[in-house]
Image (cartoon, rainbow over all chains, first blue to last red):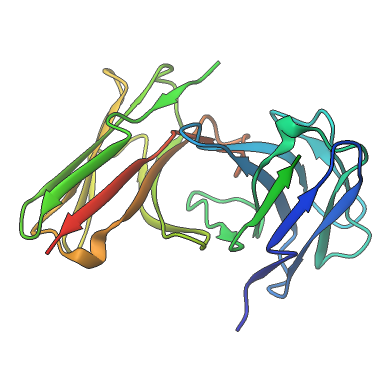
Length: 114
Length: 114
């Protein structure tokens, strides 16, 4: 089915380890986003991209890096994981935003940092 | 800085009762407000979007109202069903230029008991 696919769905890391979360969309969307969701805090924007080769910081970018080498993929990297990065990560994509804010979300990736 | 709050964090009602979910925001200068549904292990699905010039939007059993001056939105779900059990989040788009960089509330987890 068309949509946004996130891999892996679950991951456990030790403090200081690195990892990459992959987001792939097959809807030819220009815009892609990485959010994190913590209990009771809603979703917070980490980084986003407005097109292939572009990235920009969101509300909580520290400790994360991103890359958008291909239009369909948006990678979120943790170079040195910390317990504070334990969270559920959601990727989303959209066409250029219009009045309708149509966002398509992935199912999430649950990351635990010990 | 815009802050979005949803109280209560959790709600339990018997089947058939009407649901009333609250969302408040601190800055009344918004472009639009959106309500999402989140099921466990899944991404977010958009339910209703209200533009800043609108007072309410309806879709089936769902009705969302917006009072910008008081910084409030309410989502009404009529005649609740067990299938309505989910977490409901509201999100504010602060301006047209903000695009899909939304500010989310913490969500209200709803349980509809048969």
